Structure formats: structure tokens, C-alpha cells
Image 1 (cartoon, one colour):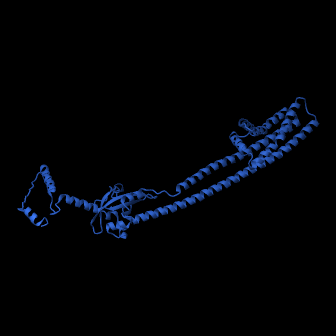
Image 2 (image 1 turned 120 degrees about the vertical axis):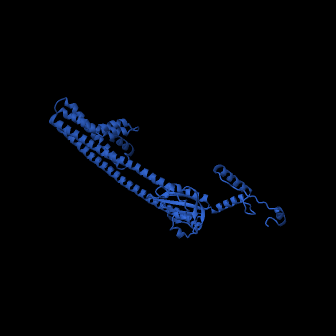
Image 3 (image 1 turned 60 degrees about the vertical axis):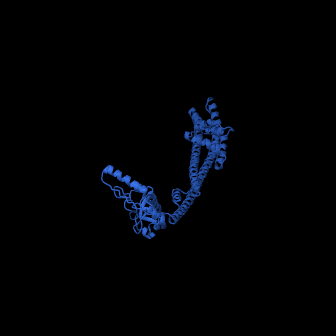
Length: 420
């Protein structure tokens, strides 16, 4: 594997197969659970609002009945007025329900009716929404049916109150009329109390159903998310193990030297290619540090005597020391990685470029020396003369130039060849 291939492998971040989909699914489930929890909370709040509203309904009906009974006993107009006022609560709820049961629901009229029924203003949107969309579902359907059964008796109670209101102006009632009215009132009250009790029980069953559904859906959602999280964790662990195995395989089988160092420069891991470059056994390398591997002057130290990794990790060519002390040139590149606990690990790639340096020196030698005699050539002589003249002009001093001429040298070359 060449340097460019190793660089690409080091820079590339492999994508976990299916990991993005699992994260998206887990996130979607979490969002769905939050939304479902909000819906369930609204259902619970609506159930509580219906139970509270039924309490207001029953209290209004009972207060109206009691006020009419007092009127029949005392004949005070104030009792009739109290009865009419108390009846506004169940009649307001009746008005609201009929407005919502129309083909085109009249929410404004329903809102006004629920307000007359004593319901909290914040609960009215829940009452309207739940009645419009859930009145035919489960226990709510039974409660709605029972509520409708109270209409006839409630209207009969209203009619009785209005009849007594009309007769009040004609004078006091005789004993027989009072007894008749009391009998009618008790019959209506008995019917309404029984219906209200059944209506209340249906609402309680509806609330229990909502609570059970809440627990079931919540438990199922938590279970699903837990299972997904466990599956995701297992997949991540498996993928990390696979990536680590690939990294180790690439690390130990690479054709270039690879090192793993700690913050102090100690060798933590080294592959066989690095051992071959420096002519060490790999187990020996693991007992050495970067100070032992580099020639003097190559290690960058900061002001407190520690390795300045910011500068040390800059790509470049460094001089390494082989086992016999000889020099080897290595093209160096590395990166630092912080672990979860903040410790620094350094991964470095070293490519042996000694041959390149030797070739460069050879080319430089051939450029300045005669290949036959090994003496410097004319261009090198001119360069040295120019250098000497420049030194004399700037620093002074004296130089001497010797000239030797061999007679008949061309004859020797022509007769016996350049090798002789």
C-alpha cells in the first residue's frame, strides 16, 4: 500500500451499514412516543373534564330540585328563581351537545353552552374536540347514549319549573296541588338521579379505559425503544469491532512503517515494516521511545521539555537511527487523537526514502564530477572559483590556483584509450 493509499485510508471515515437508518428509526420512535404521550395526556385531561362536567350537571339538577321543593313548601318566589338559575347548568350542557350533534357542528354555540354548564374555560376545547371525534368510541359511546336519556326528564323538570312560575301569579297552591307537584318532582328527580349515576359510571369506565390504554401504549413504546436501543448498541459494537479488526490488519500488514505513540513519545504499537526500516525486532521497538528512534535535533521540544506535538506532527522528512547507528531518512506524517479520558494517542506513518536521498546525492555528484576520473569537472571548478572570488571580495583573504599541463596527453588517450 502506497503513501497516498494510506493517507486516504487514514482520512476516510467508514459509514456503519444501516446505522443511519437505525438512528432515524430510533429518533422517529422517540418523537412518536412524545407525540403519543401528548395525545394521551390530552385524553386523560378530557376524561377528567367530562367527569368534572358531569359533577356540575348533577349538582345543578339536584339544586334545581331542592329549590322547587322549597318553593312548594314555602311559596317564595326566590326559590323559583334559584331553581331556574340552577337549571341553567344541565340545560347549558344539553345545548352544547345538541349544537355538536348537528350535521354542521356549531362550536360557538357549544362553547357558550359548556360555559353555562359551569365548565372551566380551559377544558372547553377538550370537551368539544373529544365529543366530536370520540363520542362513538368504546365507553364514551355508552356515556353519550346515557346522557341523551336524561333529556326528556331534564326538560320535564324545566317544564315543571316554568309551570310553577306561571301559577305563582294566581295565588298560593292548595294542598292537593302541592302534593301533586311534589309527586311529579320526586318522580323526575328519581329518574334523573338514576340516569346521572349511570352516566357517571360510564365516564369512570371511559377514564379507566384511557388509563389502561395509556399504560399499555407507554409500556409498549418503552419496550420497543429499549429493544431498538439494544439492537443499535449491539450493531454499533459489532461494527466497531469490525473496524478495529480492519484497522489492525491494515496497521500490521502495511508496507510502510506505522507507529502508535503515547503523549510522552513511548512506542505503544509498531508494525513489522517499521521494524524492518530500523533493523530492530518489533518487540524491541515496543520498549523504545521516539527519542531513541530519531537522530539528534529531529525531536521538537517545547519550553517545558515535552514533545511539541503540534509541530512534531507536521509532515516532512526526518532522520531516523537504525540499530547499528546509521542514518535512514523517513517521510513522516501523523495525527493525534484524544481518547474519552483526554489522553493523547499519536498515529504516525513512516516511509523509507533513504534511496531517494542516495539517488539525489549520486545525481549531485555526477553533476559536479567527471565520471572517468572522479575529479571535479569544469562546472564545479567554475563554481568554486566564483565562491572563492566572492569570499575575497566580502571577507578578504588569499587563494591560489594551480595549473598542471601534461604533454602529449591526447596521444595517450588516442593510443591506449581513456581507461588507461
